[in-house]
Length: 457
Image 1 (cartoon, one colour):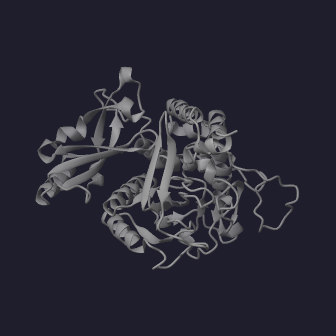
Image 2: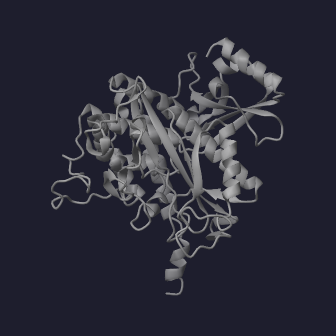
Image 3: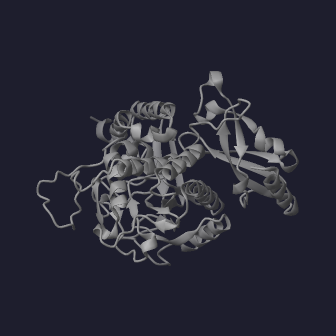
């Protein structure tokens, strides 16, 4: 970005009495990091040369070669309401230390940009639009530990429902006012909110639904939405979790992603003559996602806890198929959409243990693979139940049942991610290494339920 943009941001910061600049970025697995500098240290050099940091602590590099730099994105400047001193937030991306300050190929924001460029190169569409659903639990208290002499978790909910809590009303919905406050903060961060409500889970499950924007901005907004919720909860003496399955035999938290493609502002998923008013392009996009769904799970559902959510009986997607209004299918086509410009699909498996940039970019790349190869989901055996035709011969295909299986699928099927140099091979191998290490560390530890089963045996 040019000097004019820097001068504009710097002057606006001075006019608003800003004292600190806060640079935020995600590590490889999606955990948020930040560093702050006084306003007088915010110079044009920061935007060209960057600020040095330890890439090994972000999971990006080995310690023997860990020097990297963070370069701020001036377009993302916003006031941070959670700091006592006036502070301006900016997202920053990881770059190498070469003279050109080359973008780091494994950085999530860089991959999101690369995916958007890959879309434009197809000629089929020039933009993707994403509408996220944020599901989470609010607990009055939460405590947990795992070390050599103890392993436990304990959460306290002040809500008690003997029935499905979907759209429960106050005073029984204890956190409606809290959600109001959070949505107001989200709007101050320019994150559009469609609505919010109590979700199915009877011990404090919530949902806030966002609205459509481009892939990179969606990733940024997901990061900020989680940041807002965690901070607002702590200020209110509450705890928020996006864990896919924090409670046994209760509804899990998803990160459903509504999406469609546009060209010159027109929705290319719309075709009044097609199934559910979807165009051949949309069906091929669906075919690509379903073809690669097992591998996608390694990036969209990247925790062992993810697969405690993806089980039958809780409206979670478990089947690799698609159809209208089917909440058990990996892809649901909302039947209530009347505006052809919003014709869309909803990919339901993801959860918010994912790195949102890698998650959305991977889904887009799978869809583009379907478009390039004209993958017909119906010919592949994923005929929707409400579409006339033969169903008896169809074999139900389930999503992976655990993270190990998802990682095996990614190891075998990731060429679609490498197309147009969007995902580097080094990231795939690093991801497999990091996630297999997580599984190993969990498998080595006694589980509290093992004590119930075996301690007195």
